[in-house]
Length: 222
Picture (cartoon, rainbow, N blue to C red):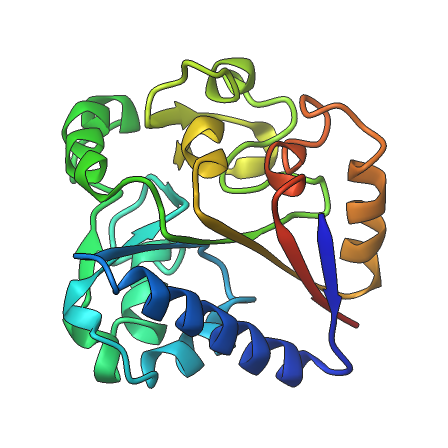
């Protein structure tokens, strides 16, 4: 794990956006690039900065790490946030790879959504968040199928449920996250820094973020 410390949160957001843009430019020397990002409000300023970057966005596929099983009309929808903060400006022409379908349960959408994701793998640039409970994507400690989602032979996507997650979730599995070419984790504040230190001392079943820490750069500011 590499830890990058920034003097301010604004500096973190701008600096991380620049790093991701640079890695996408390298990836775009090939046919296409895939960017996978988290939901939630923390990465919003990174998305704002990225959306203005002069990239060949038409050749970039954007994929969420995970999604709550709610429609885009819900304020809890990660897809809704992504459209509002990243897929605008220059980045409006990027391809959004869906992680939600209007069916009752995530299990009903797994086959179709996985088939849509497969051509965009491996992920070129992966940005993750981390919760205070040391979850990443929707790999929550205590989730009903966590062991399966972290297995070496896991499918691309899985549906997970956990008390801390609220709604049912759909998530990229550990196998897919670990295969990313460049991996970054965004955290802020003393509590998240302390959680990161705890994660380094725990097995992955108790701190799922451990599955990517060995080859990730963690970006942190107070």
